[in-house]
Amino acid sequence: MRGDVVPNPAAGWTDPVARDLVSAAFETIRDRYVLARHQIAAAVLDADGRVHLGLHVDAMVGRAAVCAEAGALSAARLATSARLLAVAAVRFPKPTEPPLARIVPPCGLCRELLLDHAPHICVALPDNPQALIPLAGLLPHKYVGTKWPAPPLTHP
Ligand SMILES: [Zn+2]
Image 1: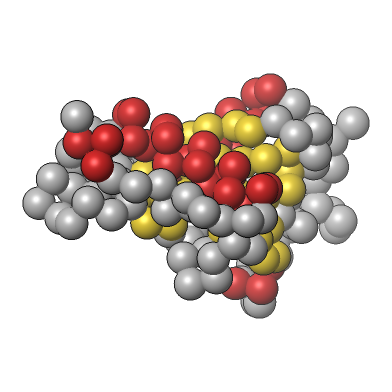
Image 2: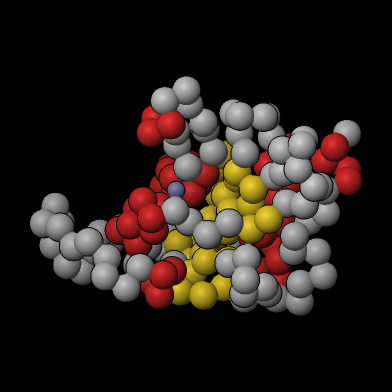
């Protein structure tokens, strides 16, 4: 099985929170990867220590695809109202690529979405191994609409 030869991109990390979150995303996409269907998985950590998983769902019409981060956010909100602390996403390589899974930063839409629901969430980045950094730093001029008043949505 190809998943046996693709190493965990967080193997050897010393920060247990970052390592476990990236590992959860990696193991999910390793087990659920399907070429041109499911390429990325995401994991979201809540304040109670639970991890919620999401799977990228590709589509014939590209804009109909759903990002893994959106799936993980939805799964988290189905399970809990706890604060969401961190997110990590991992892309599994195609069969024609070198056998390296890699951490991927959220796309622009997911940055907006995650920050709407978790303004203090941190993220694992490919060029900043072993640490989770505030996602807000990746979107300094976030869109601010009028759907809900500031501060952002809170849960009971
Ligand atoms: Zn996205």
